[in-house]
Length: 240
Image (tube, rainbow, N blue to C red; front, side, top):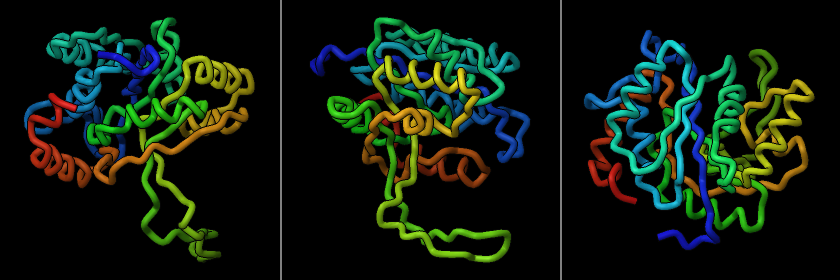
């Protein structure tokens, strides 16, 4: 039963990318792990969450039928909408924003191919939204980071304050709508929602995530994902 200030969440999942690094003709969200699309695992993590009120998939027209078929087999007790994706990720998210229920007060954006986020991320993010305009999942950078010019190493970047950003990224709905409108008015494209919010002066926080929340972009990632599905087993997808 909901108890966190009557929060209502729309989850937008941009899934219109081609996934060229995977080297497959099948788009990444529809590659299978144990006979289920990667996107199924991602969707089930949200469908079972008590604070999520709707899901919105932004897909390219060439996979629309696949998306409809997947949604029809989810047996979801919350609405799962499908909208058309755009040429860039930002365009897909914007289409999702426009399709979202206007009464929902939080919008969460999540990569279609990240099924392994920490189960605590949404609850922890909502707590942070009491103080901040937005929040993003992330983990501390553990590798040494160098800045280079061509093949020349220029300097070592101190990593103590560096965070590797994941999704989900979540915002008060009014904030995300505002930054998207401003970005389009300035013809500015960012790499993620946080970049847009930073640009327009909003305060953001980090939600502690887990290293397992990989983005499945290469064949190696797909093998790792198979291992993680085995590790977490069925309970991971049906209970939070």
